[in-house]
Image (cartoon, rainbow, N blue to C red; front, side, top):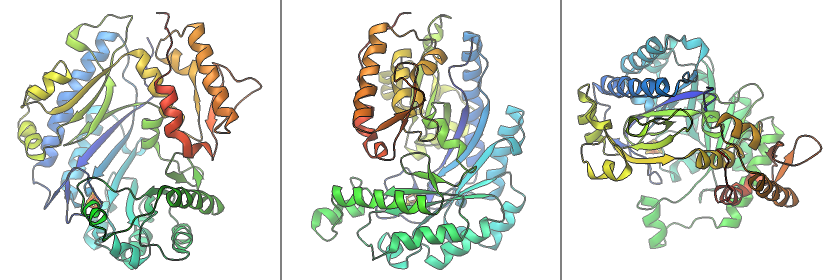
Length: 436
Ligand code: SF4
């Protein structure tokens, strides 16, 4: 049996930051990284890999190849280098892989890129840096409450360019814009040699400092039309300097497209380690696999950092012995806070919706069904064809070849990238019978 996943990735969450940015609701604590974090991450990794290997064995399927390790946060550049390298080396050893064959990404905050940090990455296995620049404009950085200055951002990008690929984050649609800011930021990114850019719209998350300021009227944010204008402007400006759009917010120079992000859009399997990390894996519920039906599971680790640390301090499997989401939530000692089983049909629908975000590779319904061993009824194929026709009439998708049907590979257009949520809604609710 072929693997239902083309690739596999590992995400490691590092839940510490030096300060709290006023717009952020990620899972983190303000303070230093704990000294034995690497050991806890590796305990979780080894345990979950043992369970995953048993699941693949039960199905008689080879595990898909690991292609990426990604340290996200929080602020992963705060994790001591020895801990970071220990995690990477242990994973490489267990996977029997060489770091040159994988994309190994570290998220970095510009204020961390000093002499000591550069010395630590000179001998590191990391080969890609995701740099949280957000803007090269000091006014925007101050407004966002960031800890770095524009000149630190430029220096960090120039330094990291010597040690690997550099992808930078840019925030668009902030209340602190000045005339031409976005154009200047993108031009700087290009001239300083960033290989890729993520242009994220500022969103106001509930409970954050920005949320309270918006409520009290002391912060005025852009309306939806202004956000849409900022998004289109970013699309155009990035395209002008050769950053191709690869996903909703993601742009890259040709040949430097991120591997890790494609695992999410191309529906690879990902294993999330650390508090709050999410996973999508093959699943063997109650050890009751029947060879003919695949089961999948989407799960989230507890975002209670202390609880997660306590559970994985020792090499314990207690945290994962759960059978349902209800069980996970009831069982306070569980390391997971969410566990959602996905049927093959649900997985196919999700794959279509996520795959349609992939501007470069698009998505083919027939290929996905084959990979998941799902036989879609002729009514189901017709229903999908109808959806594709509607999207095409709205100029949201384009397609390969002469006919648009179940076997056609479709791609979102530049316009369609702004309507992905609407397209996803239609695909996720597509009703059809499968022929198993
Ligand atoms: S550094 Fe990043 S993760 Fe930490 S508070 Fe700021 S935006 Fe959030």
